[in-house]
Every structure is written in structure tokens, then in C-alpha cells.
Amino acid sequence: MLNNPILERELLSLFRTGRSFGMQVGVAVFCTLLIGLRWPDVAQVDLAGTRSREVFVLFGYALLASVVLLVPSFPAASIVRERQQRTLVLLLHSPLTARSIYFGKLVATLGFVLVLIALSIPAASACHAMGGVSLTRQLLPLYGVLLILALQLGAVGLWVSSRSRSPEASLRVTYGCVLAVVVFSMMPHFFLQGSGGVPASVASYLRFVSPVPAVMELLGHRDIGQRGAGQSVS
Image 1 (tube, helix red, strand yellow):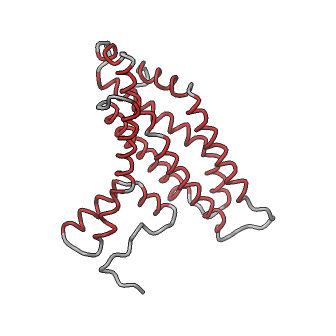
Image 2 (image 1 turned 45 degrees about the vertical axis):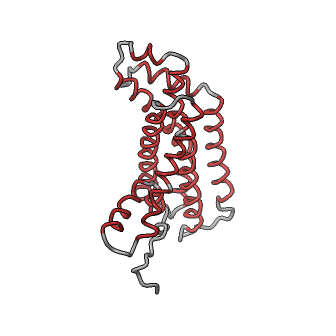
Image 3 (image 1 turned 90 degrees about the vertical axis):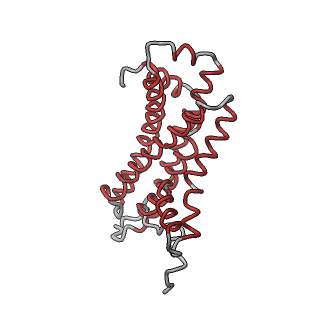
């Protein structure tokens, strides 16, 4: 897989674009400002870790939004652009298998996500150094969820791109699918929880397609709409 020429070509073309450079600079600057603005300005230890948890919440949601909004654009235009440039037929007739072409493009997307995550590691380390944020129970699981999400969105983007006629249409459909995965998959549970029966059980499992409940739990927030109609309010 590491010797895949598609992977090498996609990574080089990806990192040479001004858009990817702007994304990397934006993530690095945002994380730096976030920690700089919330860093303690007095020589006192916050034993409760309140400030660090506030920073970690903003940090976690910002990384989630970055992956959701930025990552799908690259795989969504990958295959359809090959078709427009008439290079897809050449790739399919090359010694490379279709599986190698697909995984080369998918792993290239994950490589870009790894770079974005690496740029956020100094800010994550600062959150951990401030206290109140666990490395094994919060930081590492958060990065794991984001990597799985990137893999999921990359696969969706490539699937849409392989069936689209233009990059613009592929982007629209891809972000529609992303909206369905991230937001709409939670809505049935919001309305059906606490009602019992098979539909409520299916809706409860369907919401785990979205990364939002997992990220909210890692950040110490209650799940969206966790209290259902069948639960009493204290």
C-alpha cells in the first residue's frame, strides 16, 4: 500500500494546492489562538480543571467541524475529475487494480487528515498540561473518533464521485450525504426515544452512525435529546 503510485500522486497533488495549505494554516492558527486566549494568566493552579475543560470542549468541536466540513471536498472531486480529464480510462487499463486505485485515493485523504490532526497536537498537549483532561479517556478517543469519521466521509465522497458527472454535482451530493450521516441520523431518536417498540430501538442504534453523540460524551456533554418522553424530569 505504501508503494502505491496513486497514493503518492494524490498526496503530492493534495498538498500542493493552495486550499489544503490554507486549511493547515487555519487549523494551526486557530488552535494556537484558542490556547493562548485561555491560558492561565496568574501563577495559580486550577485544581478543578475548569478552564482546561472549557478549552477542550471548544477544541473538540472545532476539530469535529473541521473534519466534517473540509475532508469530504477532496474525495468528492477525485474520481469525477479523473473522468473529466480522461485519465480514468488510463488508470483502469494500467497494471494497477481497481482496489489499488480506490485505496490509494482513500488513504491519501486519511493522510491529509493525519496532518491536520498533527497540527492540533500541541494544543491538545497544552489542554492536558492545564489539567482536568484525561489523555486515555478523552484525548486519544477523540482522535480515534475523528479518524474513523474521516475514513467514513472519505468512502462516501469516493462513492459519490464515482457516480457523478461533474465536480460541482459531486460536491453537492457528497455534502448532502454528510448532512444525512452527521445530523439526520440522530433525528429519529430525538423524536422516538422513550416511546418503546421496534422503531425506537432502531432509531437508538441509527444515531450511532453520527459522530456527534460519541464526541459529546467524550467532551462531557449529555447526548442530544437524551431525555425522552418516557423519562421523568426531576
